[in-house]
Length: 292
Length: 129
Image (cartoon, rainbow over all chains, first blue to last red; front, top):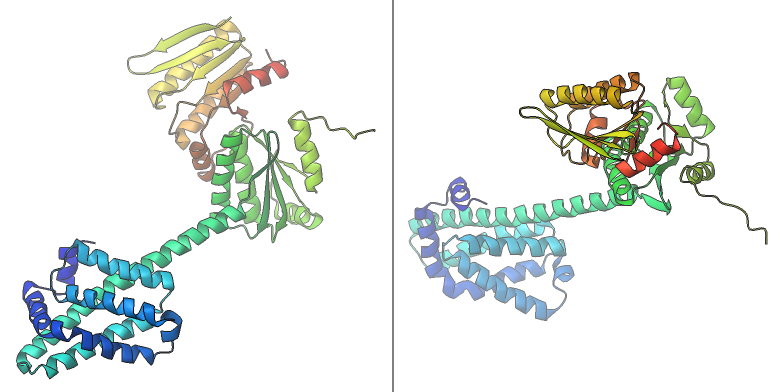
């Protein structure tokens, strides 16, 4: 985050930050009262017990909040300041605090701080200026926290997608020089691309000679899916690894011929058993029944 | 017996070795038009000179290969086949392969293997030598 640019966006000028410090002089001695009032509000929220199960944790969080607001009223926005807000965001993301609770809490904070300012018997004109300054800072803090929550959520989604992709492309060595990829579900171009990349990586790693793709679990095989499969087999062949597509059901065979899909020189079998047998022959394995 | 020939132009260089009666060309530099012309000229000339019945193009040292260069390589291989040599490409990395296939490269009829040893074994097995 570019701090000067962001401060400019939120109109947090030197004058506004000076106003924050002025408000801080009035509010710092009243912070404990403000926190107590804020917790009275929080206890009324339905989420309170879920996120604050015991008094010990409430006490600890109260202390942290006092420190947080003290830093707020220094009006000194540094890398450390931003890092502390990002930490708060990360913690909220980890405990999955709903953003409505967080934003409602910040709104309530601003409201309570204003009440404390009014109670301090300040000049009404200065109060209005301090109100504006506090509002801008509250928005700025909220932005950093919410931005962090969003980033953490995005990271979780990316990690989840990666895990799903790993699970959806389970390339396994089933014999010396033979890799098996059982495909299940729907194959779209994104999955086909990832499958190709991962399959090629595995082929390089294992120096496999035969790559069996079992499509008996693929939901639908149409022209698009067939083209994806053909591309994967072409790629493996270009690496020097022969491909066999197994699990071609009569209906898939019918569809492919009706659609005019040319599978070229790709070997296909009806069952995985047939493909495995063919693959064993290709790698020169000689399997015989034990007569004893 | 292994004989080695190094063909150097002003800025292009290709190494072609004869291994077990097979010509192995190592492509380790960017495939500019100059390099491709040099490869065509040297490889076809060497096939004619030696009567080699097998050609291996080794891409192991190549990090990048575009579609036009790949198609040019295919044309060179077809020419070599017209001279009676069976051709094999080896050592293409996964990134190049994924790129070529995604861009719709025509790979029909191409023979590929992981490395030179496998290719030479294959030639021996096919009794092409």
